[in-house]
Image (cartoon, rainbow, N blue to C red; front, top):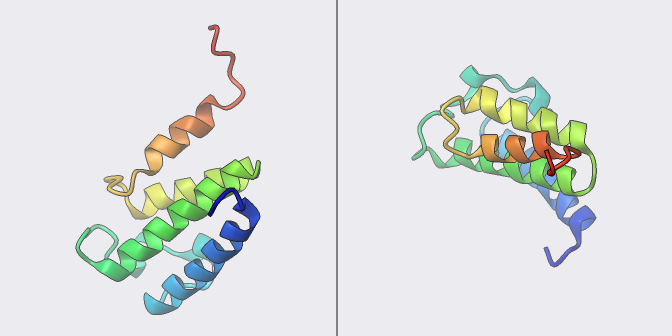
Length: 104
């Protein structure tokens, strides 16, 4: 994305829309539930595309300073992927450390 975070976020939104359509999911990622697709099987490509796209969306929101939107997307990822195959917990950990004094 070469530092063009806002442009990358727009692409991520388009990809989320496409992933929702391809998986027959609610158009708004906030309305997607764990039982709406087989998110737990890593070999199922379309649900995995949705999860990775949501992770990218969360990351970009965080990079752009939209921390609460990023947090909401990460929490949704963990709801859909409780075994965390996608790695949302790592980003959530980064988000939890934002603003903390590293000097302890």
